[in-house]
Length: 218
Ligand code: GRF
Picture 1: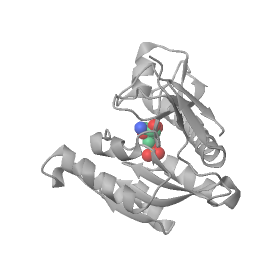
Picture 2 (picture 1 turned 45 degrees about the horizontal axis):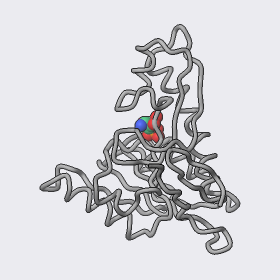
Picture 3 (picture 1 turned 45 degrees about the vertical axis):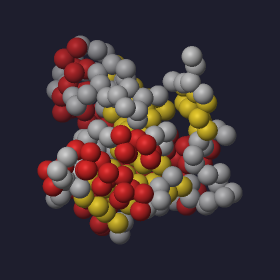
Picture 4 (picture 1 turned 60 degrees about the horizontal axis):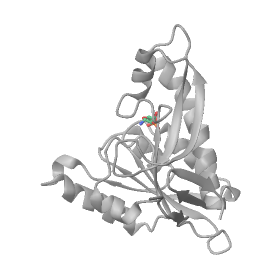
């Protein structure tokens, strides 16, 4: 049975001047920085209202702090269960009233509580052309497989691992002398542009999810 069309939860620009983004990070935060740079222009249509992380002392948090943006950190090991951690992340996100939550290098899977609140408006960027090479090592797995085109995918997170409906993709060539590092760096250049372009369109135009198809627009 086909899944029903889900309408974008983002409010039309006439109702709210700027969509509110919470960005989740676990590392260097170059994708976050690309969003921060884009949102400096009011015509982008979105602003980062908070940055969350699952660990301390990462450059992603430092980027947020330098930009004067609120941060929160929840480490899994500080909670009795993974479900409790998931509820804490959900509650912290909720306190910032996001229209869209963006996982930009956040190395944790969302749990049931999080998806209950943010399903359909939680997107993740992955360094491979899904559905090929899901999981933690997208760029390395693509190189190992010998593909000639690699890339990045922005998708709406569902309960699976990198299985949700695809919002945008960007491809890059794999060079003969690539290492995992050189390939991942080339992917990340394309990934940042894809992320900025797609999140901006989601914010400005809205989007619909129709089964596996995501379309921009009302
Ligand atoms: C990105 O390639 C993302 O897709 C992957 O980890 C990388 C994060 O990079 N999950 P950064 O922290 O945004 O620099």
